[in-house]
Structures are given as structure tokens and as C-alpha cells.
Length: 427
Image 1 (tube, rainbow, N blue to C red):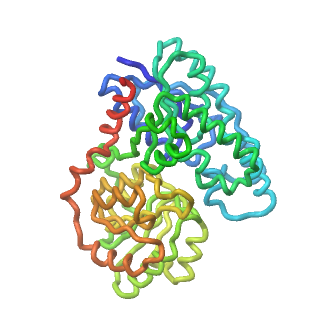
Image 2: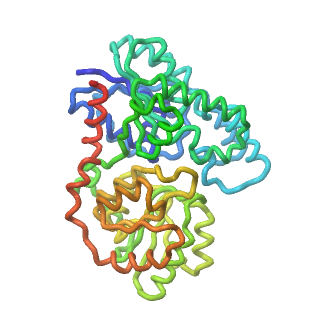
Image 3: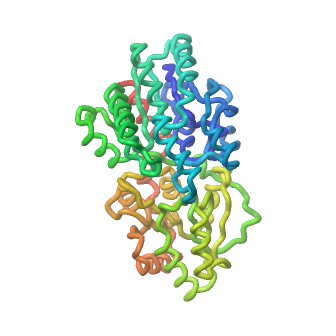
């Protein structure tokens, strides 16, 4: 069986969307004759946006997983601010005073391309050892953190191997960079690293057509080696055997759920206006936000006198998140209002599809997410201010059951997408 080294910062017990992609692909690669060997960071030295120990159950006992220590500059932030490390480069953090601005400046101008680069020296040395020990000919580096791609760059220079660079988000153009007070020098250095990695990798994998277009315009020399392999859903997560009993949640036939992080860049005002009209005209509706939610959303809910109809549920493990999706009448998906948001394709989108529930998408009507949702689900895609369209859809969708389009979504299963990676590995 061909062995492939997967280098990823995020791995169980890390939670959140970043860990899902390669946890799931690694699960299915052996079915296609590829053995994944995983190199990741020791949890004792890592900074994770969230913890989900249930994901450790999905790692096979036979899978080789190697962990190394790392230097963690975000520990300083945690100790001084006495709160968890910021998610996604401070994205979604409440605007704050001078101290936080100083931290943002340091993060954006000292730790390039990101603050998790302290893992690189340890990961590089361990990767060299594993490549020699197992005679590895292919490595896959997945990011963010984009500093992980620099490990692949160093290994490519030292060994005659195939390097596949997998990017789940944009690099220099990722939306939260503008919140880091970057100097022109820092922007230039980051762009140099991005260009060098993309040009040096044998294949570049991105999750959306928009990200591919962006990289192709910036670096025409790489456009022919960029492949789009989106995020997806694992059919096993939706089996009855994996069902989680959410007994503490009262049952209702009219529940709208948003599952995932909701930062201040996510436009919510128009939807809350539509939902307010809905509950005023029809009884029995419930709105649930499941996951980390910006405090401003709660304030807006209170101002609209919706506290009795809206429920805020803190971060839950992945299995419970799936169940919240399944027991919903309508699933709410919001694309943040940031630059280049047409290419945002989260794993949550595909899991929404797998539920077969109606989807209300607030975001670019010509974006990649809109195209997929329109093709594979009973849905509506609206701009953030189109409250009337949202209201009409919620009324109509509450009586709709979608079964006929499921087969068209099978190309997005983690197993089928893993097969696409195998084709790249064997190319």
C-alpha cells in the first residue's frame, strides 16, 4: 500500500471545521490503496479554536499518528488577556482597546504568515525522519495555518518527492488580515511566501472555484496545476447508529437553526427582521444559534423582543451539531460580508445538504455556495437586506420535504472526494 504523509496542525482532539477535512479523508484513503501517515502537533503544545474529544473515536487504532511539540506564542496572549486564544486571526472578536490592538499588530507583523509557525521546526525534523523511515514519496500539507505550507516547501527542497499543497482558505487575501494592522513590509513578505509555495508545489488543491480563480489571476504560472476538491459530508455521520439523543431540547415542528460560528462580519439584521415578522404572524417558531456567537447578535435579539423565541446553544461536539441540523425545519447559512466571499465554501454547507432540509442562504447570489445550494437543495439565496424574500421562504419551506435530490449530492461525500485525492497522488 502506498504511504502518504499528511502534515496538518489540526487533528483530534481539536474541534472545529479545520480538523474535519483530513480526519475524514484519512478515514477513506486506505479503501483506495493509500495509507495515511499523519504528522500533527501535540495537544499540550497546540492552540486550538475548540476541543472535540469525540472526534478521536474516528481515528482508527491502526492509523499512524505522530505528534511533536511546538513553540506557542499565543500562550502569552492567553495569560495576559485571561481568555482563550482568538479564532481566525481575531476575526469575530469584539472591538477592544489598545492592548488588543497591540496584540493584533504583533500577530500581523511579527509572526508571518501566522502565529502557529512555532510548530514548523519540530514538524520539519519529524517529517524528515518519517520520510526516510517509511520511504514516503508523497506529502500533503493542509492549511490554515498557512505556515504549514512552509514545511512542505522545505521538504520539497530536500527530498525528490511529490508535494500536494491543500488550501482550505485564501492565503494573503484571507478576510481577517485587514484586522491585523499589517505594514506594507509584512504584506510583501507574506505574498512572497504564498507565491513561492504555490509555484513550488506539484499540485495545489483548493476548496472552491473562486479561490482557484484568485490564485490563477495572481500567479498565472500555477493555474494549470490547481485542482478544486471541495469540503463534503461523511455519510456515516448521518446514520441512525450515530444518532445522538438531544433529550433536553424541546421538540418543535418549526425550528430554524444556524449551526457554527457566527462573528460580527456575518450580516444578521435582515434575517432577524424577517424572523420577527414571522413570529408575529405565526405562532410556534423557534430560532436556534448553535455554536460560538458574537455578543452583538444577542443584543439585537433582545432589542427586537425575541428572547423567548431565540435560543443560544454554546459550542457542541460534531455529532451533536449534526443532530441539531437534522431536527431543524429550516437551516440558516450565512456568508460573512468580507472581501472575496464568493468563494467561501464551508464543510457545514455540505452537511446541511446531507440533511435534505430546506436551506436559507444569505450571501452572494452569484457565489460558489449559492451555485451548489441551488443545484442540490430546496433553497433560496438572498442578499442580506431582502427580508421579504426570507419571510416568504420560511413560510413556504416549513411544509417542504426534500428527498429527490439526494443522489446528486453523492459526489460530495468524503469517500468520493478522497478518491479524487488518490487520483492526484497516483498521477
